[in-house]
Image (tube, rainbow, N blue to C red; front, side):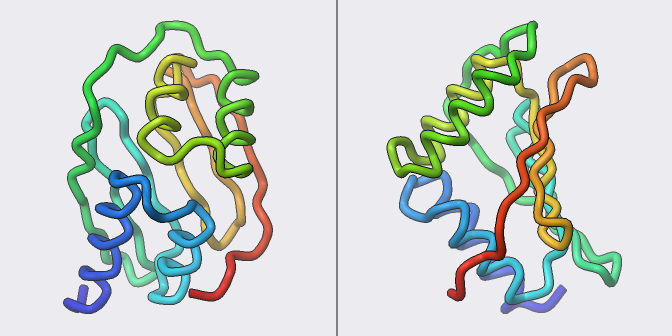
Amino acid sequence: MNEDKVAVIQECSARSLGGDISFGQVVGKLMSIGVERYHADYTRSENTYYLPTGETLVVAMPHSPQPIAKTFNPAEVEASVRQAQRGEIVYPQFLQQTMSAGCVGYFVQITGRCVQYFGRNGEMHVEMFPSAPKT
C-alpha cells in the first residue's frame, strides 16, 4: 500500500479516537483512496482496512479499556448510532456505549453502504448509510 493511502488511513484513525472527525468524513476520506471496507475489532483495539487489490493495513486503536457486556443489545447500539449521527457524541463515547451494549466490533462496508455491528455470539445489527460527503 502506498504511503499516501497509509497516511490517510492513519489520520482517520487518530482523528476518530480524538473525537474530531465524523463517521461521514471518515467514510468519504477512505472512499477517496479506494478503501472498500474496514473492520473495527474492540477486543484487539485495532482496525483492519481492506482495498479491492487485496492490500490490507492494521492500525492500533487504543481506546479506553472497559469490559464488553456479555449480552448484545441492538436497541442500545442503534441509539448510540443515532446520537453520533446527531452529533451528540463523538467516537470515544460511541465506543464506550456500544461496548456497554455488548458490541465486540463492526464491519463498515463502504462499497455496500452499510455497517454491521455484532455481539460475541454472532448477533448483529445492520445500519445502512447514504453516500459519503466529499472530503
